[in-house]
Length: 494
Image (cartoon, rainbow, N blue to C red; front, side):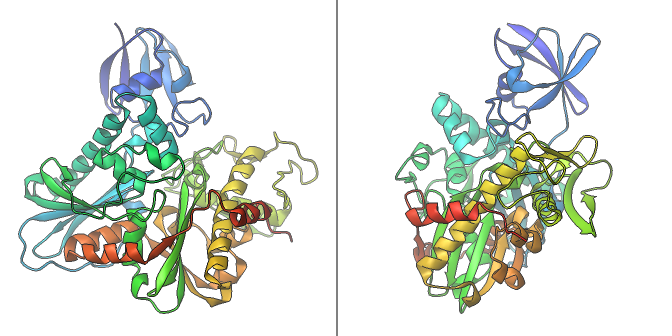
């Protein structure tokens, strides 16, 4: 066996490897977090690390670089506290006289949020958010499912990673308030169907192939636990409409709402529900990772250094950077704004062509933002596919419900991306119908809010009722969706 060093933060580690192994494979095996949206297939270009050999230092793709004896791999510090990225949720209430602590978890594909509560007083000790460490194995659920199928220990590894991370996050909150993990009595967890399977150690392979039936819908109280603590998982509607959506519908109170409301949770997948107290028609669409900043040439998550806002003053383009400083890339909300601005300026045509000089186009066209950050024609195409999927899903729900946009009371945008995006930009690129512009309400992290409420009120039966209120439309074989998707590929014209 050979060895090399890994410098992560202020610590240096020595790791062993076998001849022919890639740097990414070794780093994954040793538990280091490296963003690899494509799962290490050499397609996304995001798993860059600094490789030092002797006096030479270079940026390389970890998935395409063989491990070398005696080299040093330099990793950027990851999993900073992302609590700033989660909007404050409404107070959920107290369970009464139960002693001890409880934890609520939003287990997202991209990020994880954990809140810890005093069960007696209902007081929230704190909330912590981190990037999901499973991102080393792919940005989306399909890539991670593929990993569990391709690797003998893949399911066990992904389950272990996320379970350890959730415990560590909860322990961190407890320590900050002079409390301990031993005081936690129970945990309520909400996530998409695949992520809940991975947490529970259930094989998710059946979710990736027709008829997309999960092993469990998590409708019965089982034996899920985390290091001795009881874990209740939110009930799921289908393979692609998970417990995060039932929790979100509860958090927004739409199961008691009069009229018709549109609930949207948009990320790598777009889950949506249309209805109210009389029931919901639901569906899910595949958006790809563009809204999360992955699969984009200069894309990145909504973290310090990301451009998250673009605006126009006449024909002058300006932007904002999270945390200030130099721009490192563009996150999902910034991508929407940028596309909206360039459509207005005539640099993006209705067919999605990026014009390098507002006159000529080829697929290699590049629109520079800074010396190191730019938008490419391929980026525009990725956004085009993502926005078309969301718009087509909405059209199908409206048609199935026999409703028009004018009959929608409100649009509830859930999740980090949904809460950050500018509704005007979403309409300008054709992701949302223009008739809904004045009805859009950012709702924050409704998955976490729903998990918090269920933890403190014990309203698990309410979530089961919501699951029963949802009628799911499978769009993979829907001709109506395919036709709508093709039509929605166009960007709005002037």
